[in-house]
Image (cartoon, rainbow, N blue to C red; front, side, top):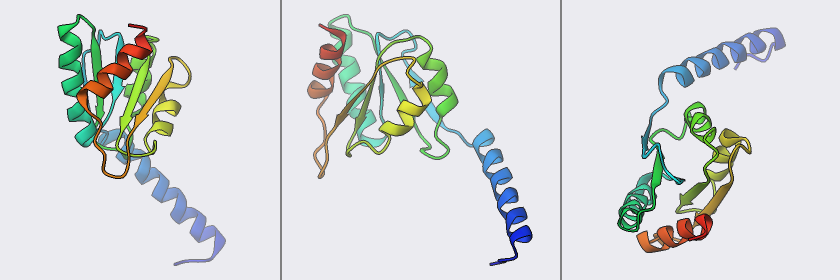
Length: 140
């Protein structure tokens, strides 16, 4: 570790250049249902549950989309921001107390409402639970 302030500053600036390169090259995500009435944001097991909720919604003529970050860092903030310009509501579904929620809110930047459905302690949300929350948000 170089504690000479000028050297240390140079080292930090170089590291941030590298971070910017990573952000430009390594963002990974999947987006399904661009014409949705509501977009679910989820990863891992929660994303699989959301796909099931999407199928339940299709049976009732409701369009749900899924935005699935594959990389949580770098977070696909630009891509989520572009989707938020449609003004449709978002439902962040997590098996946690909202660790991704702040990233979603920062990406959406109040262009659309962001809701949260979180389960924790190993409890997996059900497709029916996610679909019910989506319907509640949509007023159906």
